[in-house]
Image 1 (cartoon, chains in turn purple, blue):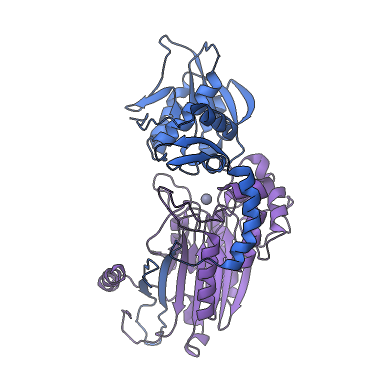
Image 2 (tube, chains in turn purple, brown):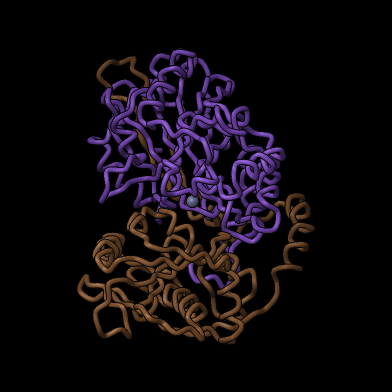
Length: 302
Length: 234
Ligand SMILES: [Zn+2]
């Protein structure tokens, strides 16, 4: 029911809604193989290891990392190219964090097979030493392009980006963090330098395109949108960006019904998505080139 | 399929100006993780000893709740309960010579409390941060900045004060004073949540008491959580 009405809505609007010539235009491998890339993503899981209790007023029985894992495994069994990403705020929110200082979160995410994450403001909550200690149990990289940790103990703990070869496609993923001042106690972030998200994001995305990435994904913890302030958000980043195809956001705990599309500086479209918080939802974005060359037909609905 | 509340959407990438411009076919779905799905038994087994250890520490009943205690701007029962618990705890057996009120932050309340037993873990969820209480003395003209802050944020937990038509009124103090005290968290007094008006502080007293410990203490005293759902921001 829901699905049908949704498709209808898009059928009606999609003449005006034309998405981009995303970077894939340059990629010739697309028409050779008929495969899909599945991007799965979470944000602001906030130490929610278990599902919410059944008497919870807002989210009874929802979430739970074990159910999320089963879901991910099922998708992995059906699809050959899956990326699993997180946009930060792994820490803080349940007594699991207070009891085990983030170690269990890292161990579970490793078991789930996360490919990469970025750091959210709450990932500083037990200080950088606490994060580093927990991170020993993480077998996936933390991507932070605009935090300069060079004068801190995290100097070798994160990287700006990572390139994934997913069969036929090269995917560049990088991370952008929120301004820490005013949000995180100074004692917790120490000598971390926060660099301008938009210029760093554009430079990194361009670097990734130059390195041959077909698709560039930004893991952002900036927040989806700020209506009353001019604080940089995923919406402003998208508008002022170049070479970013997809922004997977966090921080504002925004439950988007569907990804939002924004025009960037080169008049190409950028997809922004965010899936609330606490692992209540798992975002899934399928990129499928089965219908890549369909001539002048503008609308594809199947 | 019907066990997932599926939201699908289709987007076509590419303006078909040139016949050979590829259109990227994108499909997306926000998959709800809910009770109708199976757990992964191996992962659940891995988690269970952690859960047992945590429960041993956290599954202790400390009070009861007859209502859903929720966070909702401009004001709600959980916002009131928390600010009241802090205010009552901190002003107990104290003679107040200046106006005092409690100001916390809505964003700092990280969970709701359901009907039924209130366990230690519930208060850890509501207040997971290890923030402590501080008393901050401010000049009366800072009150305007606080009003502006609360009016633009849309509401923060307050106790012993109300905001009526945009004006903050500290209760129980009739004559005019030059200064007042705020009881708040060290996170906020250090500029957290952009409460920069704390820069005006004339004096700060660190109580070193964890906010969470104070909530636990007051919940134990109340036995049944006191419910006041009337917004104090009007
Ligand atoms: Zn968060």
